[in-house]
Image (cartoon, rainbow, N blue to C red):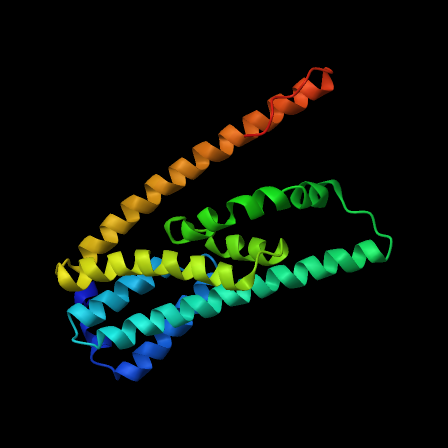
Length: 216
């Protein structure tokens, strides 16, 4: 059975234009189907440049173009969802408690949108939802794409630097990425539990008629 390196070498012998289109499509689909491992796509692109001799500008632009299209798609989904909500309001439909909770986050999201979008590439699994939120809450499209590209340039640039300039092997990069993702997921889990406990305490405090702690 061929090893991973042999499989990658075989793919690297395919026409560059075909590989660039595949990378663009895969980078786009990461934002449409979040389970798709977008960072693995970037790792593979770095391998094609460092080990297969593919054009760095071609591969990097393909990955970034797919990323940009994915961000734009998610933003438009958010805009569409907000229009549906507004049409329901105009028709006299009362928003559900869950929807009211989401709408109440609008000011907070707008206040922290830049930081949230800049950090999106470093947050696995939830990137797409951050751009859907930008569209839903009406954050300007230009700023959304600007901060999204800043984040993507920083993250993808680090991966390409390690894979191309430092000569790190694909398997080693993949192991590092896996460890990083594990740490991030643990931190996100801890943060989620903390927010859940805080929400429960505030609700319990409110039910007893005592003032709830101010939001941070």
